[in-house]
Amino acid sequence: MKNNIIFLARLFLTTILVLLSVVTAVFFLIHLVPGDPVLTILGENAGLKEIDGLRQELGLHLPIYEQWFNYVTNVISFDFGESFYYHLPVAPIIFERFLSTLLLAATSFLVAMAVGIPLGIVAALRYRQSWDGFATLLALLGVSVPNFVLGPLLILCFSVQFQLLPIGSKEGLMSLVLPSLTLGLSFAAILTRMSRASVLDVLNEAFVTTARAKGISEFRVVFHHILRNAFLPILTTLGLQIGVLLGGAVITEAIFSWPGLGSLLVDSIDRRDYQMLQACVLVVSFTYVGINTLTDALYCFLDPRIRKSA
Image 1 (cartoon, rainbow, N blue to C red):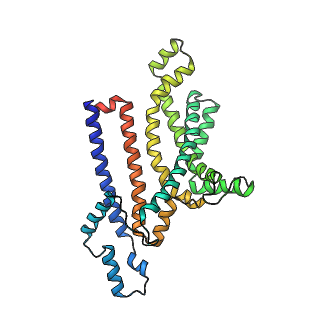
Image 2 (cartoon, helix red, strand yellow; image 1 turned 180 degrees about the horizontal axis):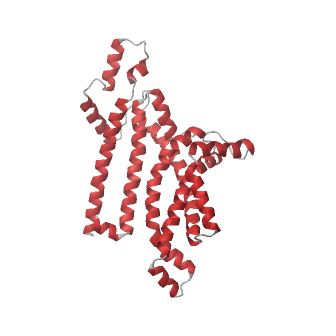
């Protein structure tokens, strides 16, 4: 019990430091982006009085360290300010778009799980047979073909040629199929390779040989002994790749006109909407850090050796 508390405390403090570093990095990087948000809002022909008034209203006249402190304080209270472009609070817009991105990421995650893990397990159990070669080839293709190539190919095939699936933005569940496949299949390729490697590492262990020598059924050997011990590296890959799914959604959302956080982030860059851009980057970063922290905690509780050595 004591080891659990110490481990969770260390993990919590590390997460807080990482999040503070992310907030600081986002703040200073955004301020290095060329362009003046005040001129973007008022236009190039605005007078000096209007420019100075808006700059004071936005707090941009303060020293940089005061702007940073105010920004960190606002982030802690979930106040991301007001959008320069929409003239509305950022938080409700971010929340609505983030739900769309989560929906896309969740369905892509299910696609990857349904394809990648079973394919990797079968490839390992049929090592150096036709199934292994087939799975390895598919995984290689999935890793090699980027989203901005796979997406248009799926559109040409299923929307233009056969007219089976819609291309447009969020128009029902069918419009979710192609973007989910675009994101999920590349993730499935990584899962296939990791599952295959993890199962192969466990297959020749002494406890597997002993279980088979005792006459235990092959089904129980695979699911109770092999997969139970091979799942830890797969779990780590799952946790890391969820964050990658959120990042990869930027390109996929642009291809399929999906109204998510990725497309909002790209639009905010074009509009010099600093408040919205900062919020988009922070939400993606916080989600990524949170998922990785949860994965670390789950990984260590599943493997007591890691917890004791932490």
